[in-house]
Image (cartoon, rainbow, N blue to C red):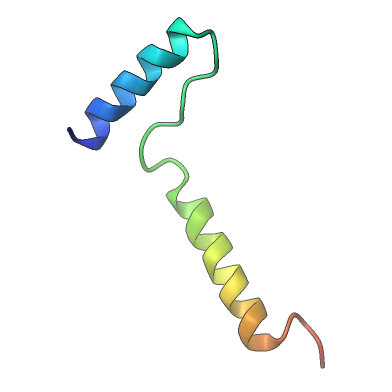
Length: 50
């Protein structure tokens, strides 16, 4: 089963249980990468401490 099939199944389950549908695969990738880079930057720079 690939990501598209899993998304279709999850969307169907969400509709049956009256809950919000999950985001389409890849939608949050940029947000995740930004969070990872921000965390690495904070670790390397010491959290903005001098």
